[in-house]
Amino acid sequence: MTNSKHVLLVAHGQPSDPIPAEDDLAEIAKQIQTDVPEVTVHSATLASPGYLETVLDRLPASTPVYPLFTSDGWFVTTALPRRLGSRANPIMPPMGIDPDLPQAVARHLHGTLTARGWQARDTELVVAAHGSGRSRNPAVAAERFANALQSLAGFARINVGYVEQEPSIAEAARHCGNQALCLPFFACAGGHVQDDIPMALTEASFKGDTLPVLGVLPSVTSLIARRISEHAAAATGD
Image (cartoon, rainbow, N blue to C red; front, side):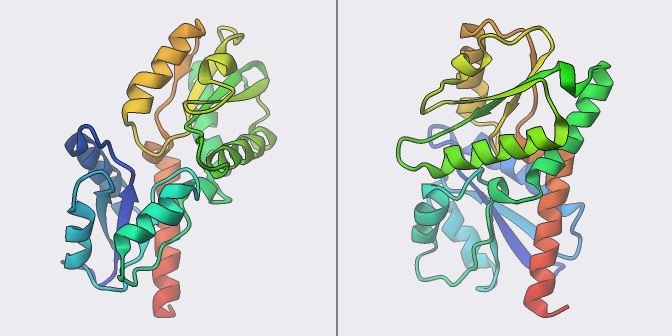
């Protein structure tokens, strides 16, 4: 390994089919790597049996873990620490609660609107999030993100809908006009993004376009790289 500094990018993954999700996460890690050459970026999902532990065992004990999750919910606060066990790897704040995430996404959306010749004030945005019946944290993170994004971008309307709680994505998208976008508030493109969101949008007769997940947006991967670089500098006193 070329660099003495390392970081491990961890995502949920796809329990029913772990390998494609593992490959997708590795691609995101490569994208982040281009913006932080001084740190070697590794990746592992929670869904691949034993793989997270295998990767950790190959890395220095001080390697930080960056959770590619949209909130500090159960997976970040409970499942991930359990998997780390007695290891002392520091866990960084997850992507979804980064205070600069709305600004990073707003930059991407500005380019998206410009390419279509649209104005934000005439465009409706549906934020399609996961939600949870187990914790309020995922919904709080999604709502906080949507409110901050609206203050930055000034859309005609932003509606938030969820896979696992009310209001549903179909409800959030039901009365949108032709000039509308759906933003999946997901880190990676797993089953919810590939199946549940399109089904909900079809149910709602949504006529707009669906954007990529947050974890692949260049402005977001650059933000993640910046956080990794800052963490590495703080750890070494640079």
